[in-house]
Length: 321
Ligand SMILES: [Zn+2]
Image: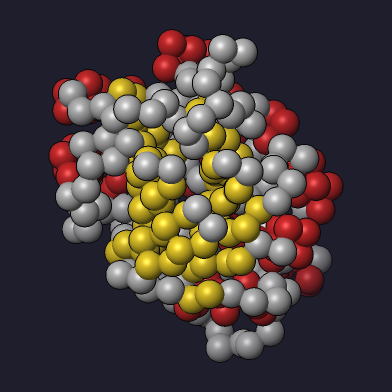
């Protein structure tokens, strides 16, 4: 083995095992991963006859959404680069994939005012400075996520914590406490590995920070969104029209019945279920650690709200009550 290669493998050392497991899961998913074809009856999308009033929701992949109302647009966790699993497992330098970001942004409304970010991991925050520079949108995120975004080139950021409220245009945004699912028993990339003040480079530099959820009120409709969580922190007891609940990992599935009991949503949209290591143009494929049959079963058992799925870049207008 070349010296440089040996040093490189030495550095990834004990992380190599997890990396190998992730790789195995990823490659298994390439072969075995199901798409949305089995669930066409659950896919919601606008048709030519859909009334245009109400909030229009566009799924951007991973946990990314665009919400549009009355000519205004708000984004949550926009992530188009879709860095491959090998780069993450090896701890490679991460950079936004500019052609992919540009392609993803073709689907966005011309004027975005606000970007909400649930936490600092790369699959939520990596592309945000680039999207901000092209939209001049205002970033609302935790203090550590704002700090990361600024170190990665964002010109500004409004750091918030649970309990804060922001009113921007037609949007009323309530910031809520949340938790992050565990992977192999712990929250991934939980703390800073170094105290470097420079730009975040490796996957672990995009640390989680304080996970947040948001309650977005607009045009008389209420949308709850998070990126996952644990039973230790359920959403507030608030009736909502749409609950977007992260479902990437087992912890968030355990808390699903409790979350539905608290939110009593009219519509339930499980999120963060796709294999986000594949490019968006490869189409939606469930991630290796998801379990949508169980999610569907638990939603049917709870009998609260209508379960829906969204496909990439296919807008759906949330019907008024
Ligand atoms: Zn995360």
